[in-house]
Amino acid sequence: MFVAPRVGTTEYLQVLIAPGIAGSKDEKPRSLVVGHGGWKDKKVQPAISGGPVKGGYRLEIRIPVAELGLRLADGTDLAFQFFTNDRDVPFTQTGDYAEKRQVPRPHARRRRCG
Image 1: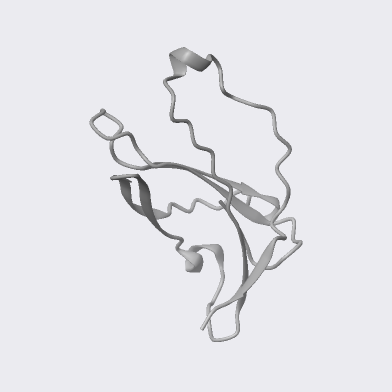
Image 2: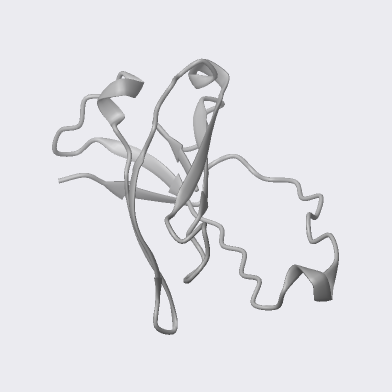
């Protein structure tokens, strides 16, 4: 997931989330946050809840925007972009599934708060 203060900016957060695997030691969601541009040094930790459910996953992600120096009010714009990867077969059947991808900056959609 990418979060930015506006569409087309070079300052944004890249939030990587592993939803967890039911019945394993990694059943709870885990995350890694990487800041880019002016947010490179931001130490933001989103609150993530949820995980595997019958037939898929359910995740709730809360980003502490105040820690990014943003003040939300009616009419505030934020840019979000979501990507999903799903791997339903065991790693041993597929080998290394890390793929080189070019990840674009947030630009897909605008959503107004309020």
